Amino acid sequence: MNKNENIDVLLELMGQMMNYHPLMSENVQPWLHLELTREQLRVIFLLACKGEASPGEVAEAFGVPKANVTSVIDRLVGKGLVSRRENTEDRRGYILSLTKEGENQVEQLRTLGIDSFKRVLERMDKAGLESLRSGLEALITVIKEGEEAGECKSIPASG
Image (spheres, rainbow, N blue to C red):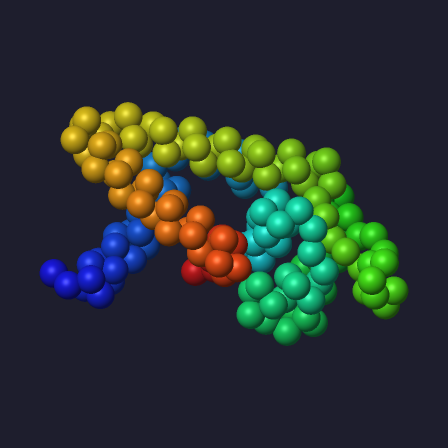
C-alpha cells in the first residue's frame, strides 16, 4: 500500500472509530445534560486550546463567516461558559475566553473521553497497544512540528 492509500485507510478507520465511540462509552449520559450543540463544543474546545480569541479568529478557524459564529458565542455567554472583554487593540471588537464554568466543562468532557477510551484500550492485547502507542507518538511528533511551523493548532472537527 502506498502512502496515500495508507492515509485514506487511516482516515476511514478513524471515522469508524468516531462512529462507534458513543457505543463504547457507558458514560454518554453525562454529556447529554450539557445541552450544547456541536458548534458550541467546537468554540469551547478552540478557546481551551488557544486561551482566548476574537470572534473573527473563531470564524476563521472554522472557515465560516463571522456572522455564523455570533449567535453561537451569544448562547455560550448566556450559559456562563464564555466571557467577553473589550479588545484593547480594537475597541470595536472583543476577546473571548472560557469562564471557570467553561473550563470545568472542558475538563469534565476530557475526563469522560479519557475514561471511555481507557476501557476500550484495556480490552486490547499488549502488541496492539504497543503498535498504537508507536503510531500515536509519530502522529504527535508531526503535529508538534506543524505547530512550531505556525500551522493551525488542532481543533475538534465537525462531521
